[in-house]
Structure formats: C-alpha cells, structure tokens
Image (cartoon, rainbow, N blue to C red; front, side, top):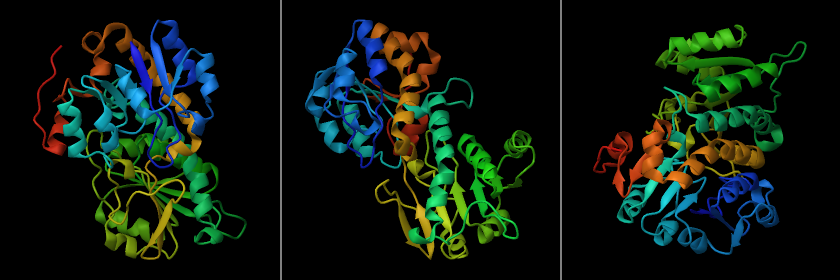
Length: 369
C-alpha cells in the first residue's frame, strides 16, 4: 500500500503523525511511505531520517495525497487539501471539531473518502488512547504554561505557583476530573499550588481524591460552585471533553467578569469548541488575549509545543492500526478489529458515525462489515 504523510499546514502545528521509525516498520512490511519535504522538521525528524528508514521524499502536498491510498495527518484536512484529495482515499487524522466544518465533510463524502478520527478510537469503554496520550502531555505542560503567563512581564498577576513562608500559594481551579484534569491537578499540587477540581461526577472526584491522597479540594459542578471557585482563582483550566461532540459552554461571560484582574484562563477544551464563553482559538506563536481584564490562553494543539514527544506518542499508538489496514484493507481490518471501527466516521463517502452525523446534520448510514 502507498502511505502518504503530508506536511501540516495548520499554524504552529509541529507534530507529525508517524515517526521515521514507524515508516521503517511499514517499509519493511513491503509498503511505500511518501513523506512531504520538511514534514518532520518541527519535531526533529529530517528528510534524511526518513530516507535512511526507507521513506521516499516528495516535494508537494499534491504528491503526498495523489500518490497514496492512505494518508496520515495530525490536523484534519483543510478546504484547500480537500481540492486535491483523490477519490477513494483513506484518511487518519484528529477531527478537531473546532476546525471541522460541514463543507469539508461534504467534500470528503463527495470523493468517497474513508476517514478515521483518531481521538474517537476507543480501546475499552471510556478509554481513548490517543486522547489519553495527548491529555497526559498537555497536563504535564499546563503548569509551565500557567507559570509563564502569571508573570508580570506577560501581563499576569506577578505571582508564583507555589507558596512561600508567610505567602499563600496560587489557587488553581480545574473544571473536569478526566485524564487531562487529573494530570494537571497532580503537577500543580507538586509545585505547591492550592488546587480545586470541579466535576459533575462524584465517582470521578472520589477516584481523583484517592489518587492524590486528599491533598486537593473537590466539588460537584453547579452554578454556585463555579461562581465561588472562579472568584478566587488565579488560574482556571477548562479540561472537559465530549467525544464526538462539541464541548458545552459551562463558564459564562458573566463568570469571567467576576474573576480577579489579570487572572489566567487556559481553555484546554478549545479543540472541541471550548467550555468558556469568551474563548476563541489562539496559536502557539500568539497564545493569549485579554477579555474583561482576564488573560485567555486558548491554544487547541498544546502538545505541539512538545512536538517530538507528542509525535512519538502518536506514532506508537497509530502504527498498529495503520499496519493492520495496509496489510488487509479497511473493510477486513474493521471486520477483525472492533477497536479500529470506533474511530471510523466516513466509509466510502457515507457518514457511519451517528454523533458526527447529528452534529453536522449529515445523512447517517450504519456501518456493516
């Protein structure tokens, strides 16, 4: 099978969907891997790295798409990329609902594309390995992001995360006790912050308290708890995720207006639409804006700032699925692997994911294999 890896065109997207080592594995199985020139530069993989591993360098996105049966991307295809996608292509990428449009989906359907949303893949009930991996990386990075934008020279309050003798620590409020929220809570606690986690599930909060040995404050999400927590927050982190659907707006503009001057919001749910009413996507090169005196950090691809680590994580999880399809074809691979089926949202131009069909008002057809 011919497998293409085009260069990512989304602003500040430095990750790549498959590492040079992954390309080597596919080439050794008899497949051809086309890598667009410079596709791995942002995460430290040169064209030479891919060539040494048997990959073939092509010099345009057109070549990467048109010479391939299967294309691997990080971000979803752009409108421009849908113009060059060949009929019958199979595509792997994140869906990134904040950037997905009905127009793009219809173009893919017109070209009989088969598409997998890698964040939709569920290896066991409630466990999505790609989302978990990216959440773990983002959770690791959130304290350093918060520390940077709490600095006076970055427009923040000029406070440190941890406390000192006679000086209280910063207050970090996290909405969501899932993978991202749990990772972030642990790292902020290790730096000495006072951490408050809100979640609508008492079970999630109980697990979080057990894991972190009761060192944080937890509360069920409701209007009162949100209002009370945001008033004292130095940092607020939106860490809720609804697979296959847009994130509900939980934090209203009226809540933001009541926050401390120069407090920081990190809306880590922005890739699914965002959970803060005043949020809009930003980029790693221009990550913050101010609204009602509150700094907003709304980068949808936070792990791209640790692009090499994130690319290794993506490649490690993606490679077995790609190898399975390359060996057996999509239909047979989905027939044999129910896990792979969970990520399928288009099959030969038909929308086979009920949640995506409902979200974008598309005709739905049940996938049968």
